[in-house]
Image (cartoon, rainbow over all chains, first blue to last red; front, side, top):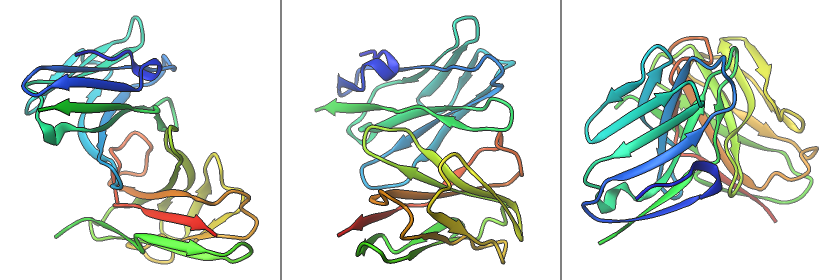
Length: 110
Length: 114
C-alpha cells in the first residue's frame, strides 16, 4: 500500500504487505529528516533519520528514501504487522527550525 | 530507565485557571522543548530551552510560560490568557542544542478545559 503524504491521511494495508508512507517537504535548505511513529494517546517515537547527503538509509524493517530533486521523503515498512498501526509523520530541519508534517495514519488489517 | 516523563497524563482545568505541566528527563540532554498537538495537525513549538536558565519562544508562545532552573526539568504553565488551551502537550529533549539534533518525546499530557 502507498500513501500520498498530507493529501491522503490514512493508509490501510494487509498484514504482511509492505507499506509506503510519503512526505513532501517544503524547504530545500533542510538538511536532516526524521520519521516518527505515534500510537494513540502516546508521544512520538523516533524511527529513523537521514541526512541530506544520503538518499537511502535502512533500519530494522524500515527504509527511508530521500529525493532532494522533488523534495520528497518516504518511509517503507517491510512485512507490516498489526503493531505498526499508528500515525507516522516526518520532520524536516530548515536552518534553525524543526518542522513536523501532519502525519499519515497507518491501519493494518489482519 | 532513562527517559522523559510528563505528568499528569490527564489534566482538567476550569476557565480562568493557570495550570502547570511537568516535564522531567534523566537523559542528561541540554535542550528541551514543548509542543502542542491538535487533532489532524502537526506539532507546533511553544517554547524551547537550549541550556539551563535560558529559553526562547517558539511559534505559538502566547498564553504560555516556562522556566528552566534545572537541566532535568522544564515545566510549562498554561495561563488563563491562552484562548484555546485544550490540546495534547508534548515535551521533548535532545542531546545537542540545535534543532537538527534528534528530539525524543515524553508520553504527553492531555489538557481539557471545562
